[in-house]
Length: 100
View 1 (cartoon, rainbow, N blue to C red):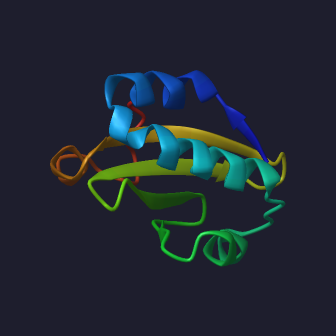
View 2: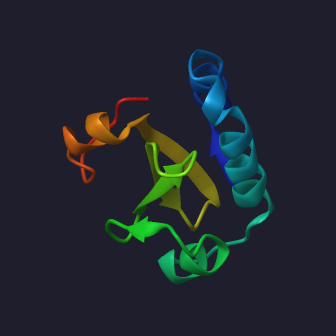
C-alpha cells in the first residue's frame, strides 16, 4: 500500500522522538501490505482496532500514542488522519477526524 503524506509521520516523530521507531515500523508494515479489506488489516496488525469499513486505530509507542488511518483498498492508498497522545485521541471523533 502507498502512504499519502509520509512527511506527517516524519514530522510527528521529530516532535516526539519516542514515536520514531514505532512509526517507521508501522510505515514499513503498511507499505509491504496488500490489503483488500479491514480483515486483512487485522491480520497484518492484530492490535489495530477497526473503526469502520475504511478507518482503523493503531497504538503507537506502547499505547502512549494513537493513530487513525483511512484506507482506500481499491487504490491501495493509506491516509493518516490523526496522530496524538492517548488524551488527545479521547478528545476527537475517530470517524470524522482529519487533523493531519
